[in-house]
Length: 171
Image (cartoon, rainbow, N blue to C red):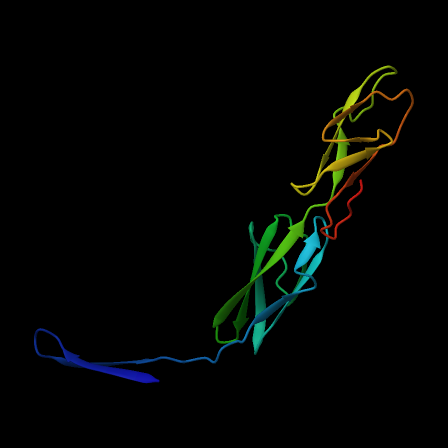
């Protein structure tokens, strides 16, 4: 559409100006994920589609991501990780869509003495996962977090959580 303006300055001199506004159809950009709910550390493929798009710009919580193709692989970190994609067509018009991935915690265990303990010594074992988890340890046979163990020989401990969010509940 072309708009015309006619006017005159303070001296009475007439002048005419025109501006053309090009209206571009919607890019109809859409973004999908291979999964919108994953366990921490899992990879997700994000895919964008749209009409006439020649370039894609992807953004995460830390800013622009290095990949500019229509599909990228990400490892979401935050419990709710949001990604945006901007599609660009030849005329320069842009459209942006976002998608949020839910990240569920896995149970993980660690010792306060990661290098080991001396014979007769003790160490604390810690676990973390979903905030409502009750942890059970074996072979210690105890519940809680943390627990203190004093093994007589090298021992592998396993912790199991009582939650069922679809992620591994044993470490």
